[in-house]
Image (cartoon, rainbow, N blue to C red; front, side, top):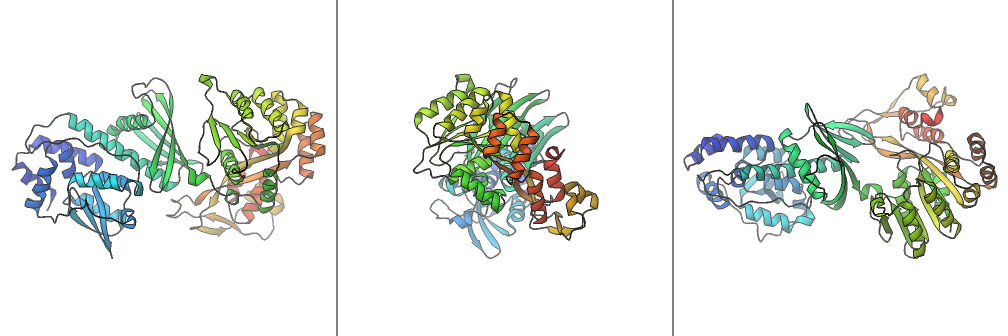
Length: 557
């Protein structure tokens, strides 16, 4: 039955024209089922709507409260869509899916479900209460662990109360937020940027290091979405004049996703930046990070050192935290006590004692590190060496029997020594404690679905490595496909330069030699610079010429 016919029948039962207009406008914005909106607006009761559909529209009903629905069937639809469309899949057979629905006559919803699943949808009528109970029952098997609020309803013909609009807008904001998070997970985005400008809302995802723009939610939902995010993150929803930082955890299908939320006031309203911290995407084997076999072997040998300090360097966003976490994950945490001091703690590691600094409370890197050393740790990870005090404590800890990991912002591995000296760290501390420095960048890897050979121009090859000119080498690029959303890339890997300290490097450190001398000696030890590591990955067809040039341009100047 067409929506127009349903509306005419409802008018006969007392529903007024202005009430219908409100519902239709909200349906246009949120695409929620028409019947569910009637219930949420308080224009009908859940029972009245059920009886109306059963009697007037003659839809087959079904009771799902005692059903045992398989996980395979439940996973056909993400839970956020089940909540949004007030439905739950109950049977699957051939090209057909049977769905229990609060509004089984909303053709737009059924068509949308058909597009999502690629199968025919057979709707069955059920009560909204049964849908809610089923979602709670199967919560751990489905999507986001957030339950929509449900308001009490009224009967047909009762006067519409304004509070209903606020409630439905809240629900629409929840659904929109879940859409945003689910899309981020689908795209493997690391960050979400939600901004309001003079022209409207801007939604962007950072994918493989670059920002891509996507269709935003409706303008009228922006403020409710921001409020919902702030509530989840324990932020002050009334405070819009100053930046705020918060954190929340959601369950998305079979994994936990942590969100680090940052708000920032602008002249048009608050903008939101969300770091998506998916443990499954970061805690991986070292083999998946992009190490060449020789470099990986040397790095793993370093992880077996009983004491000393190992630094991972590179600019912000170069994957330092991923490398450190993956390295700590390989250590023997059963027989070794591993502790970290971070700002913030991005991922929770099993059997690792992690601490987040709190400068307002006086818990700085230096204070935390000093206290940690009294806890008898075997391995310590310091999120970042930012000042002389932290550096000196970290280096002294490495001298007294701990294996210390930390990060530093430098462009090259040899440059870390110069940076430490400039900070005021005594040369003898560096010389006696420093084991190795790993410098790294991230490059995008070519999508496996659209990888194809191409012939670069000589200028590209010359810029990458002049020695490659005229050699019989196959070069690859990604043409763009559905698998990579047209980008030509599928994920990122690291390119590395690993400098392991030897006696001559220690002597140069003690003499406070310049960067050129340290670099020259490091090269003699077999250190492969970033550009060279990237060249190998170009030749192996892992990444592109331009990716390596772009990621190492400053280091090669």
